[in-house]
Amino acid sequence: MMSKKFEAIFFDLGDTLMYFDDDWPEVFFLARQELQRSLQKAGVDLGQEFVEEFYQRMSAYYRERDTEFIEYTVKNVLNTILEDRGFQDIPETILTNSLSDMHLITQAHWIPEDDALATLARLRELGYRLALISNASDDPNTQVLIDKLGAREFFEVIISSAALGVRKPNPKIFQHALVRMNLKPEEVAMVGDTLGADILGARNSGIFSIWIRRRANTPGNRAHVETILPDAQIDTLSELPGLLAQLAIG
Image (cartoon, helix red, strand yellow):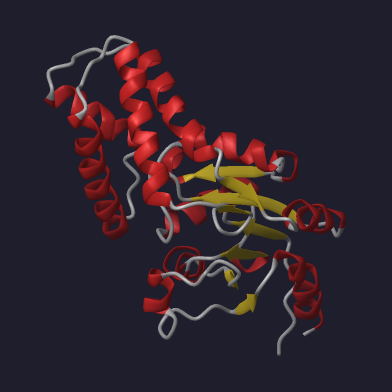
């Protein structure tokens, strides 16, 4: 095997460095209720039916972004509902605060992986440059999760699809990271759990792909397991420094 020594490692966030510890549909229902209450307190009364309407609009948004790989953001979904209901020129602070209240519900269930910080620290000691590329519908929420993880200090570049407007596997999000760090694709490895986003996106960008399988037993991954093949696989983050050492030797 040809040796590969990388300059930088790109990481996914959800189910790679952190994991969700509860039932997502149930928690998201509670989060939608909190959004409705927060808006109502601010004088924007959309009624209880808003909880279901927001779910339907978000579901359609998720389906669309998974085919177009464009990130329109949850704020745009909320704005569309407000406009359709006749609420014009809602102050930005109301939208931001209400979405923040909603995300507080889900943020409580995102838990750092036990080996995440130790692995990031070890990689930095070894001289690797680190970046984070996350598919996310809300950039402020992503930033809060990074701080909850306690990993901001390790990353030279942090990119969310919500901030950039495109999502993995769109090569543009990887190219953006490469340009910001002045790197070539062959100088980078990408670590992530999702075959159809992290692995496919890396491979289509000329970046070495490392699939972390710890939380990868999902319907989406099972559908791609025979067709989207990573360059390497690990089960835990703690295996990564050793894998990179082996690749460097060849």
